[in-house]
Amino acid sequence: MNFGPAAARRTAALGICAAAILSAPFCSLPAGAAVAGAKLRITVTPDAGGGAYTMRLTCDPDRGSHPRPAPACDVLRSVDGHIEDLDVNPGPCTLIYLPVEVEVSGIWRGEPIEYQREFPNSCVMERTLGPLV
Image (tube, rainbow, N blue to C red; front, side, top):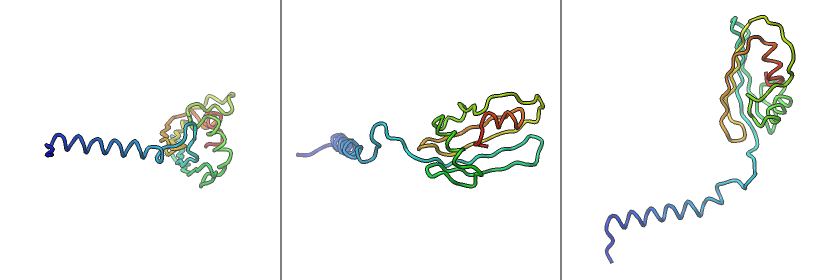
């Protein structure tokens, strides 16, 4: 029996699909399983210049160049890595305008994180992000 080019392509496509379906149980996580860990780079930059700093944070295990990795990872776990949901210690701050920018990038449990926000001053930043910064 002689197959034409179209039939050969269909047969090859079916073979690739079958291989993908059969290998799926070996490549995916069980339902409800979470990927452990985080690898983040956190940069804090005051607008007035000077005093900028960058730190690395890993979670599960909690470590890195971050000065308080365990509390920082704990607050991230409390919001499942959604930094924009943090409001660690709401309360009053002075109305002095000395802006500070925070950037966080990396991976949280297998998902990319990109967070950037300018706070009116370091008090608001610390009350919002707590031990993360």
